[in-house]
Image 1: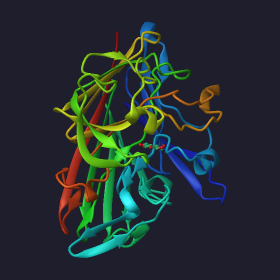
Image 2: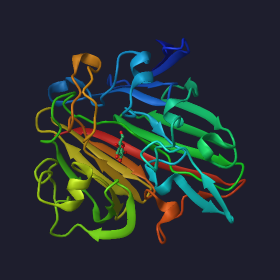
Image 3: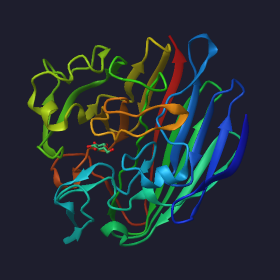
Amino acid sequence: MSAAVFPFGALSDGTPVTAARIENDAGASLTVLNYGATIQSLRVPGRGGAFVDVVLGFDSAVEYGAGADYLGATVGRVANRIGGAKFTLGGKTYSLAKNDGENHLHGGVRGFDKRIWAIAATEDSVVCERLSPDGEEGYPGDLHTRVTFALTQGSALRITYDVYAGADTPVNLTNHAYFNLNGGGSAMEHVLQIFADRFCENDEHCLPTGRLLSVTGTPFDFREAKPVGRDIDAENEQLRRGGGYDHNFCLSGRRAAVLSSEESGIVMTVETDLPGMQLYTANFLSENPGKNGVRMARRGAVCLETQLYPNAMNCWGFPTPILRAGRHMHSETVYAFSVL
Ligand code: BGC
């Protein structure tokens, strides 16, 4: 294994950005930026030994700073949506930044994805840390966050989240990598299996209503592997609301999903100790020129965002996202790669 930390240009206001890169003995590599604790590149072996960068991203810090799609970023303090941008905790109502109509999305106007983190590399991992101060984007209490990205010799990426709360607060961290196992082009022919019997019903703003729906007999049934795009344009009110898949799946166990591409031969399995996973088929992805000469486009990637259920603060019965003062929360997600 080898590791390096190096400059990655600067944001448009001149703030320098740093990258940390680790590489295993087989030549697989991971590059993480201190801006947003962002996965900038993840190169894994495909069929015939050719390496493929399986996450969409940019070549420059300026483009990350201007981007609106959370490409590869660590998302928090609370990932996905909070209805009405408010919640009540301990008898007090907290108002959060509104950045998605009347709702709060992915931590607000300047969430964790748009912050500079402390970054360090060990031989086999990149560690990003930051203190989110009391009141940031409306959230209560200081929150110390450490995200560790470890790359194994077997080309698995293990992301662990360790969070310490100074006051009672909701927390729900995820990574917003846009996976394309061919490195670019449409991702709708990728084959996907999701181990979930139910998913969260969304309202017209992609906000969970609190109801869980059965996947049986719907386009949301991924229990048998099928191409991501096979049913995406089916006549279905839930799909219409998201312009495709943009829903939280209620995972049945630790094994969350398997994504594969016949073209590159790459198989990615997702495991997590979290109860939910957002399947987002890049329905709103901006048409930007990306790194490696790849043109990013709608439905050109699959996001598999492991998480607590969105809008949990406002939905009775969802697993609680509350971390109590003085307590520590730990979770992990593993993206493991192999070849067909
Ligand atoms: C959300 C989408 C949102 C996207 C932003 C996803 O996690 O579910 O609704 O548009 O992030 O990139």
